[in-house]
Length: 335
Length: 218
Image 1 (cartoon, helix red, strand yellow):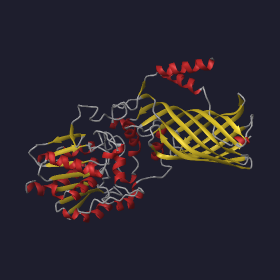
Image 2: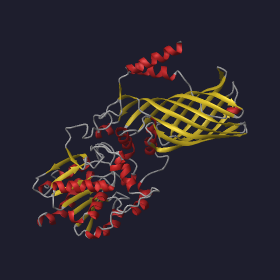
Image 3: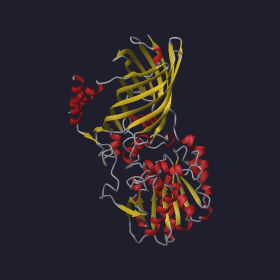
């Protein structure tokens, strides 16, 4: 009888606590465009993307491709600001967007989180906002890989490209460097924090998956030498399933990366600017030097003091390189 | 309100106990056992525990506790404390079936949040137990009942509106595996391994668990 009373009393007291639900949109991670109608969005190919356009609609289109896969464009927004009297919007209309299943865009399941679907999404955006025209691509990290994959498939739709700290363009390269890139020491705090979080909640829906990924996202690539603390690269929200399934789509049945975004790259005659942070040990100068010849017409610029997040920490220097690179296009008329 | 929550949790924790799984053929009511273990479950965790065996409703039952600290954390902010028990339900020769129940509190501190959780673990084992060795299969479910989150300033710099407080019904982790042990003198070596899935059937970041333990009876 006493034990029964204790159970009832415990349950009543527990019910008196002001409890919340992790899966409720907005509690742990920001709402996506599906839950917050005030966010700017575009609907294409059956998905609603968090997206915004900056600049004059009459100007040629520059499409920004964020990193990840699964991250968002928040840290790339300063590239649209006026720096040293220059803004990309002086000459371009800029499209910022969170890729399918990423950032604040609509969430999806595995069947539509593929490289083919991502290619179709980018092509649909280009067709909608620059029909019949060539566009300029600006990608960071995975965004550089994504942009290169698009060039590889549609060289006729791209005028030029700027890729900042692009990831490996071939699966074989990824396989070779991943041991240097990821810190998978079992005794590392970040890895144990990430794994231990499963004791507090199980990642059974998009909110909890995205939240859990955030725990591991900051420190899993220490040799990127990205900034930490209050002025670290900002992000809205990770898309865990996009991150997972896009990577899986580039792997064979044994889990080895086997994608190749360079099979037709020599068909692209436009110019490419590669930008590396001097302090980015794995994805920086060594990788960009190695990958530069894969494009017919690419130049590499190195920003001193920058890590993998060089676009965020050294925005002015990055913009100066982009401005110099684009000057030729602007002088000749971007179209 | 905080006091109300604490009372609620203590009332629930006080209902049951836990112990680790050891060779049921080597224990009798009145025995006690200490153990140390290292595990990947789901992080790398080192634990010590104590259990005492008694007879409850005619069945051999163990009551005990275990304290574990997760690797890689200099401030000991990642921990687990388990209280619980195990009762032997069936004995047919060397074949035995046992059920366990545990309540636990867990803490963590990472760059996104500090958290404390109160959860339960229910499991069952069935296998062959002889004095020199045993091997058994196990199934179990670890429920993360209620979790208190307090977000860090670094995460608020990313998402200012993240909500601190108590979160209820946060899912859980199911497991399926084997346990085997071998007597070495007065001690007992234990190996436990298996696979784990979330309540919704998703793979965990670390989809398997492995424990190596050493127990001493007295």
